[in-house]
Length: 145
Image (cartoon, rainbow, N blue to C red; front, side):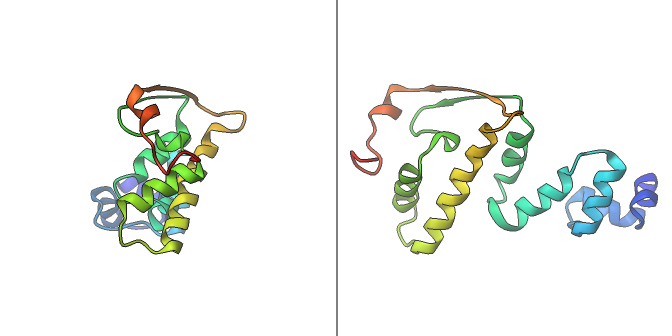
């Protein structure tokens, strides 16, 4: 904590608070922590994900997807998020958020479908997905979806 605090230019107590989750680093501190630890922007991206995009319980998964070389998943009931189309994701959000606002659903759909961009590009992970037959037979959003 003391060595990192020197490099980040803060107190060891503040580093202790960051580690324990009692405080979040500022964007500037996150950048300095990344430089000190050589984490290639992990903490800066983590802060951005916490602030705007993902639910608290999903931020770590989204970060791991960005770093993955291989993603393997098994789906029993629904098409996994990385493979969902706009229409499919919209139908799910509407079904599971009965008192939804249209803007809220639109934002959720954009966030869900943007995650799939991790599969594009030169350093994309290999994705293996095993779907239960029920996933394919379950109608979500009607025949057009």
